[in-house]
Figure 1 (cartoon, rainbow, N blue to C red):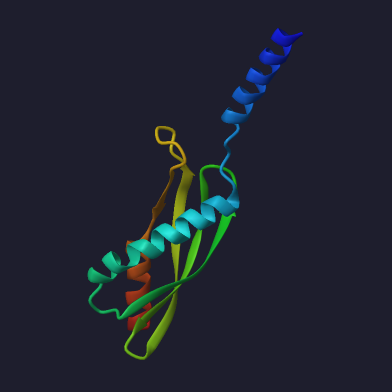
Figure 2 (cartoon, rainbow, N blue to C red):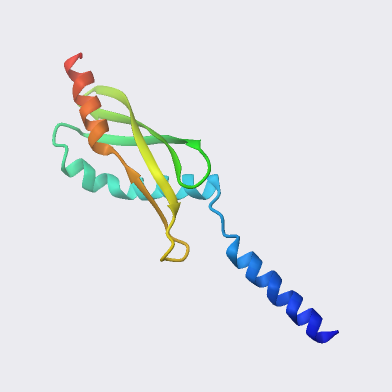
Length: 120
């Protein structure tokens, strides 16, 4: 009876360890925090801006790899523009435990900002 219990316990531990699926809340939290931490470096490369604020995130694909958008406000002087930044490939890293990776497209957002600023 003890052996059966030990085998069952081991099987349950193995199954629970394999079921570390990324939740939407985990993905949103990781992307928001990571991108907020990255903003000072990004602002250095955009001298025409005073500040960028990340207002919210919305994921439209909720299975790995997830995909969505960052809703941001870009400020230059007294002007503010709302810009959407695409984020994709949000997934857990297979080689690093508890690590979430993603790809954000700030270059596309910068082009959108410049086009809006020029009135195009």
